[in-house]
Amino acid sequence: MTAKKRLMERAPHWTEEQAARPLRAVEGEDSVDEWGDLAMLHDTGTAETMRRLAEEEHAAGQKPW
Image 1 (cartoon, rainbow, N blue to C red):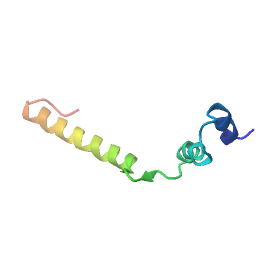
Image 2 (cartoon, rainbow, N blue to C red):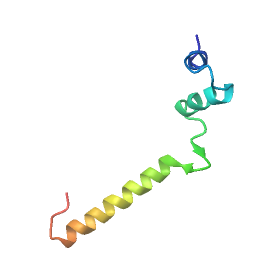
Image 3 (tube, rainbow, N blue to C red):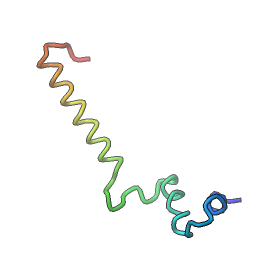
Image 4 (cartoon, rainbow, N blue to C red):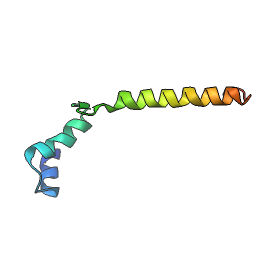
């Protein structure tokens, strides 16, 4: 049985498109939607947070790690 058929059995009220969406996400398709590329947003946000943390630690006289 395919994953899509199992999804349809567990969520019979879902449409074919609703069942296909999570499968595409898991397979790496459609990683960019109307919200944008969340992986890139996450990477950018993490890098910005680490940069600010390093600046705060430097200002406090702590050694970089």
